[in-house]
Length: 459
Image (tube, rainbow, N blue to C red):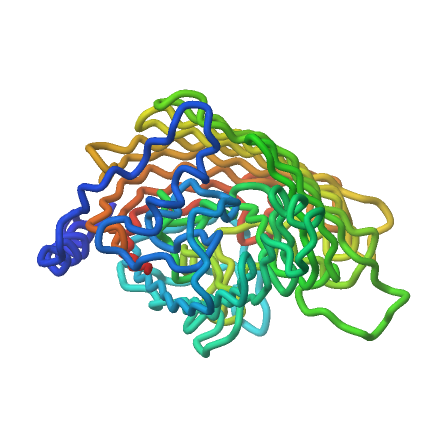
């Protein structure tokens, strides 16, 4: 382990810089009425919470701490319609990394260079990343949402992540349509797909305010595609069906070589008592065949663990998913996931039970990968400004062209402090081990471990 002062100094400096910021709001962060749906009871709180930006957009999930554990944007009419409204938001994140890595892979020589020689890494700051949010209320129950990445690990330039329209009220004045939209939501555009629940708790480039840890899952189910999703919600029950273009970068070429993707989700989410909330959902995503399937490689922002298990010839642009595993099912894919979530007072439990089956264009047989994860977070004090957390994550399956299983196991131990509802300082100890890789693969006997510290601001 590296000298203790090299690990603690960045955390001390970050805390010192944050000290002048106003103290945590004393407005309660949680409770909902017994028997209600959790999101509906949080709408009024989201409008007026502490000193955070007042929410003027209907059915909007806040980008700050108020959106924690909100999952889908709320279906509720608690925010009044007052004509056209425009909201601007942003999120900024910076990490300090102190990780070590090692491998037992055999030398792999190319033009006198050992491609299995690990890059020399040590304590230092990673690239600062940022998001920009633009949201407009166009009509009663109709809003448009756009997220841009101002800077990311893979793209230092600004680019648009997604943009979509959300319809929660009928634009046509017919009683039957008004009745339908009491329970229905429609989303259309280039958007983050609602496959599973982990994407509601993960870090999205500059916005790390919902994630109790620094890193996301090893096999990270996250992508954006052009398409539509239709939701029906009533009394805690949720059903969603969607269809998309099936590609991260939609195209009009090769019409016979691609098919649309279909996705669905069903679930139940209820505040059973004032202390106990329970949610469980099941999701599926399937595409018969399309070039460039991206469900597990759609996060163009990259991994939080810079340079781990990368060689000396690696470049930051070409190896931005270090520490992650992609099953490589780039042509045909069917994946399903079950996500249970329980919150009892300050304790939160969230699980991932996932399986993906598919292949590349060159393969003739499908392969199956599995992922399991369980995290526990305990939030402390009134308003829950402090927390401690632990997560175990394991992934396994065969690589393309092989029947031998490989995999990885990761432990993350974290803690955090919401200095305000817009500012979070957190740290984690992470250790990840690779298993089953060929002796000539740089990940053979691979391992990385150490400390990560992260500060994030979101509003």
